Length: 414
Image 1 (tube, rainbow, N blue to C red):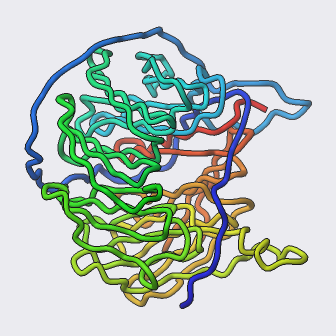
Image 2: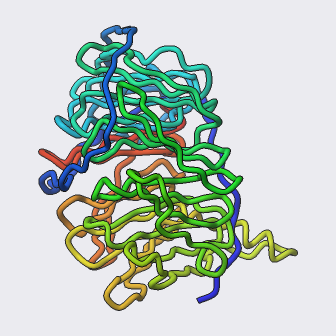
């Protein structure tokens, strides 16, 4: 199938921010991490707390006449501008970290919305935030490239570093190692808290997305020029490069790997999703979705700009993959036959999707402010959850007890 042209990124803006917690149906147990591989480095530690207890319940804002639908259990509203990122602590699923356009990041308790501490000192919008695999550390990164790491139990900053404009950031699945990509095309890897560092030089264009593979030994990074590289983290060498016809024709937007790391799925502004064999670096197949958006009068390029791949992921229990598009299409692909299995339409663009850990259920969040659950076997929507009055820009799923869903959006109450 031939690649198609796609759009640039989408900007979201809003006024007042909230983060909401929604109780969902029962998912499965936690399932993570393989064995740990050494990444030889050292240790160290740093400073600075800040805390303030605080809470709110599921009521917010007023409405004109009619009460808006609000399925949330808890609302967190300390952010004063758009909230760009949210993450749950993987060890206990009791803490969340959020970062926003107000140059702030907060670590708070999900049971009641109480603030544990503020991650102070950022000087630009906080676009990346996440906990280490054991929830000992939390890292926050802003658009200017300032990355800070905090020890959660001590509520203190232990390390910080400044790079170029930050594109993405991710913790190693088994070690206190942090990986990040920047607008100059470099990917950085640090041992935390010592700060021992390696860099992986990409092409002279932004490293737009990245992911550490499940074995902990390799990482896959996508770039603005449409190329993708698989890196050996220990050696610092590039194992495979996808470029030209094998690569994408436009910037990569997202990456995912299956549970054993044998397959990678890449998504791009060119509206294609490519399935790649991780061992050989070869493209297995290309999934292409024709845009369902109405044709703009006039130029072809206007129509091309109406769609792109925004998010994707693999199902853990069946040979299925999901791809979410800016035009609101959720495509479920059968990997064994390399064919489209279901096409699920949303009212507006999909921002992110996540699979449930131990079932064929996929969650989506979209620009209409709703979270939806889909049965990938039938293609039917299971349920829909609302509470935000603006776009949802990120969300995280608690796959352990109770199956709570944590989400956040640009705007607060109606």
